[in-house]
Image (tube, rainbow over all chains, first blue to last red; front, side, top):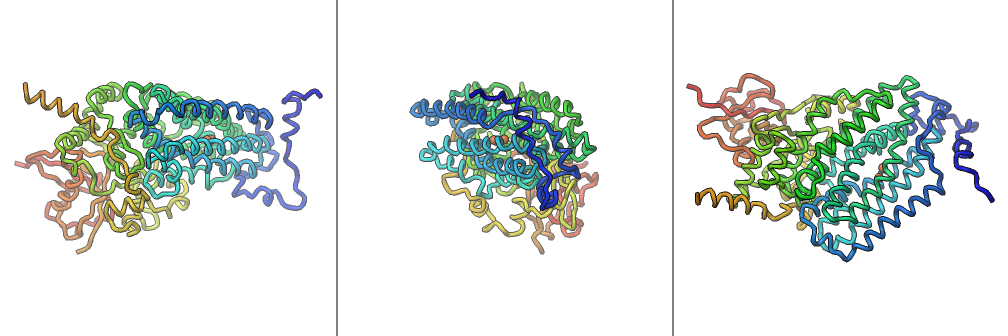
Length: 501
Length: 88
Ligand SMILES: [Fe+2]
Ligand SMILES: [Fe+2]
């Protein structure tokens, strides 16, 4: 029997809206879940997905993708890549799996909300496949790290990070809860798929895959580039929804959602991806700097996606362009200095050669972050380790939940952006974080940051031990210097030659 | 006497930090408490200079002997801790 071509039946098959007789439209599509923006069903029937795939096609393609990624893993299982990897590279894997794997399962539920509650039939089709994608991503990124759990306790965080109160995970949950777990179907399509997945997952999954291949970790490189092929498909769910909203006079609401989600994604990437690319990845394996990746994937590509769509650049674009050369250096210094509070071992990444690279990629680095690192390095070289650790908490932002920081040293520009709301004093890391909060204060006002929890007496005893227990960091899981300070030898030798001369 | 949390924005450092002080502390003591978490950890000491405290964004420093409880700061409000060369 001859099969019809896809396009001979696809449009008809996706015409699945009907006029409900026994319930109202609002009962069938509760606005809180559907995010109808006051538009009736038939307005959403104009939604036209750019990527049309049928279920049989999907299954066939996905089966091939899985076969590829799993067979690379199987082939390389005995090659001891993990055992022989640079400790900095192991930290990349640990940070990635912990922050991402379980979030993929959460994303499956966000896709499922679009699948059930969107009034746009085409969106329901695409997110059915998107939901299956996210289940696949969750499964793979739990299965792949599992072989390493017996070798390294920190790998267990691939599984448990999302269940903990570790500060970075509070930040990750706050962001993903905001953009995908607590939003209506249309807002999810804008905030998760269009704003987050279009550019930022490309950065993490393709940028990092390039570094992984350079580092010889072909299993990881194949895994995450396989995942990204799904992301780049279902990232297109949001575009047509934006078109419908703009055509129906809802541009301002659409733009606001984009602006909030892009900023949150940027902050999360500044702590997760920035340190990985510019400090943890061994120097000889770095393809580009974090800023260069950002410029390629976010600035150039995402800018185009926005303007093609008829949207404006976020109002804060100038602030953002400045921050992509700065914020992640502070996030790295913070997660390094507070290293017992993360589930991976941060690589300092500040040998003289690495500093020369940083200075070349970020002119002025030595006069700013370098000045703080000089003090840290001296303490490590002198064995004055008590001073190479903190004795208090960094103050964190009530929006992104990450440390409030800026550029130190000669260009010191650190600043708090406070706001009093209903008698409570909130602190923000930037004008933009504060603006996000102000768009819908009641949505965020009840949340307690890790510092708020500490001040409320929820972390006991009120010392490092109490904080680590609160963050679920068991002994043997707390981070320390990835290379056990071996990098300080270069500085010791430099000092010795200086003395001798 | 009452414990009072402030947020320290220390000149030359990269991050805001929570510092526990007391309403009875003078501004010099507040500066020293903040310095404990920055100087020698990520900020070099500046021999011969003193540290002054001001509200974030203010031009004027609080008097050195002023007690924290008299400054009208809210709990966790951010103060800037600024290096000052001796005045002649
Ligand atoms: Fe995914
Ligand atoms: Fe996705």
